[in-house]
Image (cartoon, rainbow, N blue to C red; front, side, top):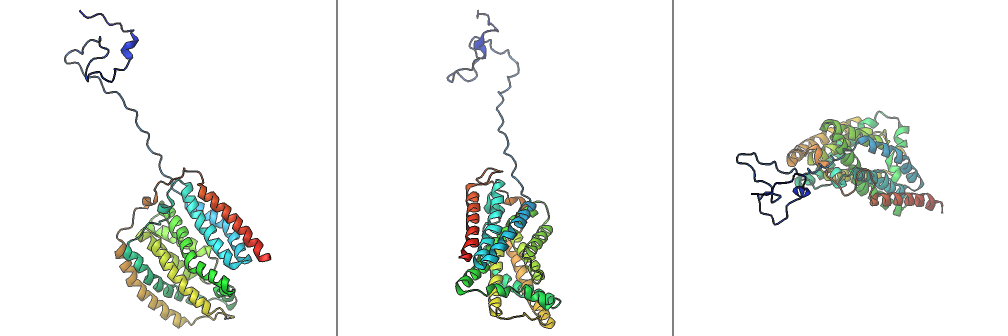
Amino acid sequence: MAAPVDPQDPSRDAAPPPDAPAGAPWPPDAPPPEPGAPAAPPAEVAATPPAPPLARPRAAGLLLTLVALFPLGLAAQALWPAAGLVWTQLFVFGLPAAALAARAGLDPRAFLRLGPPPPLALALAVPVGAAALLTGGALQALWMTLLPAALRQAFDVARVFDQPPAALVVIVLAATVLAPLCEEVTFRGYLLSALRLRLGPRGAVVLSALAFAAMHLDPVRLPGLLFLGLLYGWLSWRAGSVWPAVLAHAVNNAAATALALQSATSADPAAPEPAAAGLALALGAALLWPLARAYHRSTGSPPAPAQVLAPGGSRPGRWPGWVKAGVLLAAVSLGVIGWLPRR
C-alpha cells in the first residue's frame, strides 16, 4: 500500500526534473488520476505585449516649423543670396521634414516617399514637367495682365540671377537641383503623407499645394505655383513616391531659370499679351492631358495611406544624433553667412 500523501509537503509544488517521463504523475507519490477524470488545463503562457501603434504625424507640426524658420531663410538670402538660398533649402525645408519624421519613430525614407516609383512613371515625369511649364507659365501670364507694373517689377525673379559668375553658378544649381529635391520632400513627402493619413487624396493634394504656393510669398507667380503644386502632388500620390515630382519640378525650374537669365537685364517685365497667353494655355493643356493619362496608367492603384508608416531606428519622442548634428551645422553655417559678407 502506498504511503499517505501529506498535502502540506512543499515538494508537491516543485517542478518535475527535465528527465521526467512525459505524462508521469508528479510528485512521484501523487495518486494517479481517476479513470474518466478531466485532464488538467495546460499551464498558461505569458502573452507577449503587443507593439505600440506607430505615430501618425500631423501636418500642423511641419507647417509651424516652416513658419518659424522661414524668416531666418529670408534673412540669410538678404545677407548672401547664393549661400542663403542653399541654407534655406537644406535647413528650412529639407532637415525639418526628415527630423520630424524620425522623432515620431518612423523611417524617414518611407514617410517622405523616397522609395522608387514605377520606371515608366519616372520617365513620363520629364515630358509632364515640360508641358506643366507651358501650362503654368500661361496661367501666370494671364494673371500678370491684371497686375500693375510696380507689382510685377517688385516680384521679378530675374533679379535673383543678377550675381557675379561664381554666385550665379551656385544659385542656378540650387534652383534646378536642390530646390526641387528639398521642396518636394517637404510638401509632397512629409506634408502630403501627414494629410493623407486624415484626408482623402483630393483634400491632401489641394492643401499641400496651397501651402507650397503660399510659402513662396510671390503674388505674381501665385496661380502658376498653385497649379504646379496640384500637379506635383498628384504625381507623388499616384506613384507613392516623390521622385516623379522631383524630376518634373527640376525640368520646370531648369527651363524657368533659363528664361529668367535671358530677361535678367530687363528693367520692367512687360505684361504679356492675353491672346498669346491664352494660346499657350490651350497648347499646354493639349500636351499635358494625354501625358497625364499615360502617367495614370503607368502607376496602377495608389498605395494605401498607412504604407508610409514604417518603424525607424530611433525611439519615438527623441531626436536622433544626426538631427542634432544637422541643427548644429545649420547654426554654424548661418553664423558664417552673417559674418563673411561683412569682411
